[in-house]
Picture 1: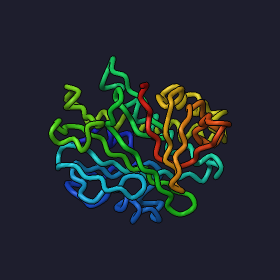
Picture 2: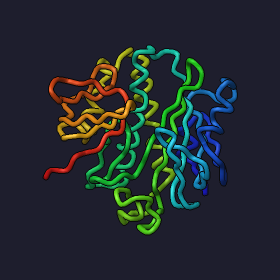
Picture 3: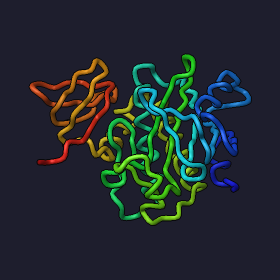
Picture 4: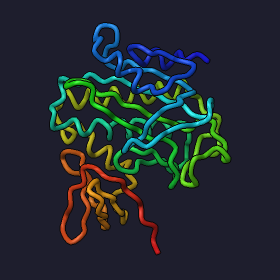
Length: 254
């Protein structure tokens, strides 16, 4: 398969037949700024040792999903604003997915899972690489059948009845992500660049009752009311709590 649109959108795109982890592969090149500049990417349809958040294993049958990792060089972005990078990635991917699923309800579950309705089609993991680079990995269920879905709360383009154009999906994502990262660097904040408002508009978590499983092991249940200036989730539960990390579950109405 060729990827002319994606190749044009990326500063460098390597398509590999199979690999353990595209994030790990890209991390090995991160110090080579000349050979692997900002917006370099590695793409495969067969990742056999991928990871999700909290070190969860992420695997999919060969050809049923894509794994894509993008190298972002972010020295111009203030350190305090870099928490917005994963949210920008979720927004960019949601917009790219929505472009191929016209009329479908596509949104972001905080911080960056992409949902079609209530079902997850893409997960994203961002990792710092040194002090001035971030690697953003994403896994998108493309041709996965209903029988191959890892959980009942997942979906894929195939399950949605769409033969996805992977080249246009990746190119659209890269262009949108580059635009938001450039805006964040230019304006110095997610608020000034419009990123916070754009993420909030796509974020289907806001306004919902949520249960947050916090890293320390406690649960927080309340209403997700907004996004803080640093990208944290604001949850109202006997006061306003700032959630910077944690698993979020949308609580269905009784």
